[in-house]
Image 1 (cartoon, rainbow, N blue to C red):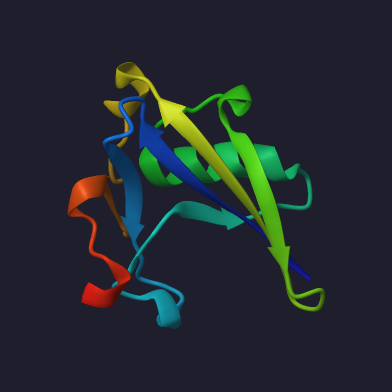
Image 2: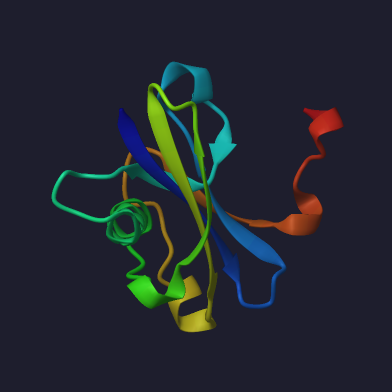
Length: 117
């Protein structure tokens, strides 16, 4: 079973959120998503969240900053752990694109409503 993590990282003002524009997998290509990825066999779920966020954004958000929200699973093929955090300005300023998938800091008031997509 695949074990994955995904995390929403908000500016401490709660006005903006970090999103990644996905290139893969195919069903997510071109869409925005929260940052995340697979849990490696030698790490815990929270450690994977720290690693994935740093790999994709360059920002080293400490383990204790990530707040566990919950888990979704189909009990057959995947487990997905959800996290969130609030970044102070110093960490927020470190967030940048670090892979072939583009990182954006999007204002919440400018996010499209599901009916506009």
